[in-house]
Structures are given as structure tokens and as C-alpha cells.
Image (tube, rainbow, N blue to C red):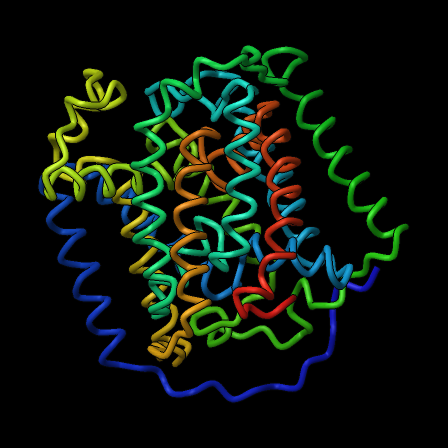
Length: 395
């Protein structure tokens, strides 16, 4: 299996200093404001900025990786994700086994498998192909200057809020209890078993004609400039995301998640437009009512999302690629709206997105993480077939 390729050096555009300065000033100002109230939230912002830089410089997306695997049997993104999952599982295991880190409790992303979760993951898979990105992809491409992805982000938030209105009914449908392999069979056997399954999946895909055709690592031309300005190889992005997810778990007690922040943003916007939270069973609970009454900067997930947006903007400016394209066709725009709604709604049913449910779920050895990706891939197949109608290119 080829893992490197010789790529002629390409001169990067000049650093976009005004964009870099603007993103830097916002990041420093927000970080300083958070630090005065909560050093923890300031640290979460810094981790989010790191996630945004890693996502952007490695162009680490889930949506295109699955599309290339389905249409072209190109496995570089799948292999990078497998490495990321194994490394994250290894880093998570000691903390989850101990139940604490740095003197405070920690818990994995473990959720039940049921009709709501399976349906939500399937719907999310369709939505990410129409939207053109997953949850993390929506954040880093929006931060990197894509107006179309800002549309996806807005409707992702709307769909997440919409999902909460129907959530009590969905949660009344049949479901199995949560299963953590680490707690069931032990953390070392669980991590080894997951690594073996991931290796087997990659091997089977290879036997059926899959190949790694994009470089997974630098081809010998590593430099400090490449680290700062990108692009990064996929494996560096995978390792950075795994480590930063583990740092998030250690800092906050919970793994990296994204969509709760979107849900909160959508609900606050709806409330500002006249919606009454008391009309919703979900938003009448004590904890959700309290979250809605606080600033979005009181939520670690929300702060992390803002960090990703800022990190991606910083990375784009360093790469000289912060150039918004404002012309968007009617059908691609419709796909952005529909894709955002489907992802938001699906993620709310499925206990999260490709990050909170899949990445953090599998890293926590939760069975629902594996069930999530199976259903999301089925939805991806449907979404890929719908893309041409919306004038979206494949792969």
C-alpha cells in the first residue's frame, strides 16, 4: 500500500496579513475575556483554535473521504480516520478507566442504539453530502471563508433546534441500553478489538480494489513553513485531532462534540425571534432552560466551535487562501439549505454528528459510534446519488 507520493513543490500565495490580523485580534480579545471569568474556557478556546488549524491545513473532512471511497475506491481519508480512531482510543482509555483526569470526573461519549439514533445517522449521511461537509467540515470551511458553507452552518443550527422540538417523540421509540466495550470487556481488550476491526475494514476495502492514492505523510520536504502555512498530510491532521480530542476530554470531562453548540445557537436565535421555550418539553427541563438563559460563551462546546472558526480563518490567512466566492447557483444553494437542515435534525436524534457520535463515540468504545457510521454511510450512498441533481460535482 503506497503511503507517500512525490509532489512537485507549489509556491503558496502570500500570507494575507489583514485577514490574519483580524482573526488574531478576535481570538486574543475573546481569549482574554474568557480568561477573566474562566481559565478553563480560555483553554477550550485555544484547543478549538488548534482543531480549526489542523482541520483546515490537513483539509481533513469526512464527507469527501467517503465520497471518494464510494466512487473512486480512494482510501486515503478512510485510512487516516482509522489511524485517528485508534490513537484517540489509546489516549482515552486510561482516563476513562480511571474515571477522572486532573482531579475531576471524565466520561466518554456513550449513548444507546435505537430507532431514533439509527434514523438520525442515516439522515445526517444524506445531509452531509448535500451540504458538502460534515459538522467539523462545516465549521472549518466556514471559518476558511466559504459563504456557501455559512449558509449550511445557519441551517445546521436551525435543524438542530428543530430536532429538539420532536426529540421527546423520537426518544419514546424502541432503543437498546448504552454499551461501552471498555466497561464490558476491559479497556485494553476493547481498544485492541477496535483496532483489529478497523484494520480488517481497511484490508477488506483494499482487497476489493481500494487504494491509497493521496499522500498520507510528507514526502521528505517537511519544513517549519509547511507546518505553519500548510498543507498538512492527512496523517498529521489525524494525529492532531486525536490528541486534541483527548485534551478536550482531560480539560472538560467530556470528549469533543460540536452539535450541542449549534443546537444552542439555533434555540437562542429562535427565542430572539419570538419562539417560547416553555412550549417545548426538551427546553423546559432544568438543564436546558439554564443553558438557554446563559451566554453562549458559558458552553464549552460553543466556545470550542468558535475556536474552530477562528483557527480555520487563521490557517486560511496563513495559507493565503482566504478568498470568499460569493457566486452560488440556485441548486447548490438549495442543497446547502437542505443539507444543513438534515444534518442538524439528524445529529440531534443520533446523539451527535461525525465528531460527537462517531469519532468520540468510537474513541470511547461505545457501540453507538459504530452503529452511527454504518447508518451514516448508507445515507451517504443516497446523498451521493442526489448530488448531481443539485449541480454538485462528484467525487
